[in-house]
Amino acid sequence: MMFSPATESPEMGVILEAVSKTYGRVQVLQPTGLEVADGEFLTILGPSGSGKTTILRMIGGFVQPSSGRILFDGADVTGLPPHKRPFNTFFQDYALFPHMSVAENVAYGLRVRGMGRAEARARAAETLDLVGLSGMLERRPAQLSGGQRQRVALARTIICEPKLVLLDEPLSALDAELRHHMQGFLKDLQRRLATTFLFVTHDQEEAITMADRIVVMSQGRIEQVGPPRALYYAPKTPFVARFFGDNNLVEARVEDGQVQCALGALPLPEGVSATPRKILVALRPEQILLSGGARRVEGHLVDVTFAGAVTTLTATVGGHELLVKMASGANPALPAPGERITLGFDPAAVALVEIAP
Amino acid sequence: MTRLPVRLVLFVLAAAVPVIFVLVPIGSFLVMSFWKMDGADIVPAATVSNYVEFWSNESYRRTFLFTLRLCAGVTAIGLILGYPIAWVIWRMQSRWRTLVLLLTVIPLFMSYIVKIYTMRSILGLNGLLNMALVAAGILEKPSTLFLYNQTAILATMAVVYMPFVILPIYLALDRIPGTLVAASSDLGARPWTTFRRIVLPLSAPGVVAGALFSYILSLGDYITPQMVGGPSGFTFGRIIWSQFGLAYNWPFGAAMAAVLFVVALVLIAALGRLGKLDGGLP
Image 1 (cartoon, each protein chain N blue to C red):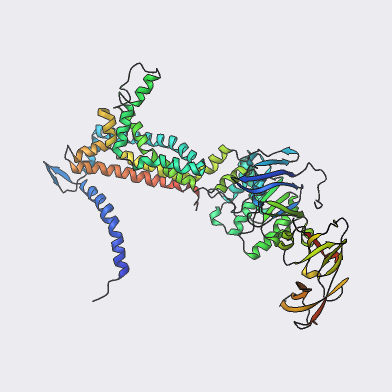
Image 2 (image 1 turned 90 degrees about the horizontal axis):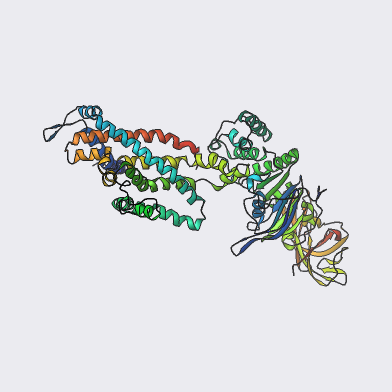
């Protein structure tokens, strides 16, 4: 797989060994292996029903895997109930206790471990300061706004200094602006706490901006694991290639040690099998240039869309429609739609995407 | 002709139902409790003599206090047995839950008299309890100890009113979001701690409702004591009933009914406060 940062010792962190989950006849998670390195911000990304939440619940201890093992720092925690795991979950609906004050909610984890009331309360106040919510210790959850409740839930999740923080779509209930703010806040908090965050989301933009590594899931299995850049520029599967924003996918063939497609004959990168077969090549719209580029291809301009900072061109090259994105200029010298256009790209920027047999 | 304000007409109609069927009957017996008997006739008056008579008669007062204690016992048994039953049903897998819940509340659809006869046949000389104890060798011959005494009233009432305790507790438990229980466990609470600090307080409204149902229903019950209590089962409900029947002293019966009514109101007001412990669970 891709490189994984900060895995000095393979024993540290959480390791899933071929865990699967079956409900009746439905297998929601195929046997899956995954390593969560100590201290990283790992995002599990996938559409609903992809099995991402199942993995999160298994690590939290709320769902028992049908097969496989879960290891933490080398110890088998598969059968441990949630209260015996050193992980804490941030619940999507916050799950604040309605009959307790903000202070009692945040201090709960310390109190059930036997810490005295005064000390736990002081720690709760400190933790609330850390998440930017002060002076509301005596309020009830019902008296808080959505954003304030979220901060209370966050403080309650991190107060016991968990080895791993599990976040189940924590931002999906927020409006765009607050969501954007909280993305930066969570990332910053994770750095300050220097703890592992496992973040589940269906929002690819959120995943790209926040994660050290992303696990892309689809239909109960992992498609690809890697840092955001690797997934964005070097997708391994058609699903991943289509999942992150706009992409140009062109059908191609591997023949005679080369890749043949509408963009011309491209060299086969080192380490890629030369077995003749059908594949796809992926090239990001912003990697296609109007001028320059090691390769030039001829085509026709179809359409130009100005969207502020970015201008999108649609062109056809060898019967294939290509999207081209470029920074908008004041007076772009563009041919009129229908006329010929020459496009450039760097063959090294082209990603080869294997089609599943 | 002026048009009738439609809203006013609707309001009057809607208000008429509770007024006619609830307030008028309550008001009428409250009023009658200040009337008096003149020979065999009920005469309107404004006297508190009925209340004075009730409080100065030691046997009435003793029966009244005995009944309060009896109903407290019925409610306590109902809660001690009913809460765990409701809890077990709540924790069941959903396909069994509906079935067991139905079995639990089916007695609510049965005739009250049938249930009492059932209890009589269980507790009686040739009843199930005696047969079982004799068969087990614990008793040599069937005992008459189980029926026609105060314990029999307590047991029968506890059984009869148990569904009224279980159902509201179950409904309160069912309202608790699963993520709250999960969050408590996630934060390190053992199952018992989660129960004590999350589940129990959040189910308090159900406990209060169940306790009120059980207490108030058993407080007014005059049939169960008569059928399984025998001569020793003289409860306040029976005294009131006899004033409207045999003794034919309606004003006195009304006064004692008013006392019972006040007890119920005080309980509802007092326990209603406890029911708000859940912090406004949606």
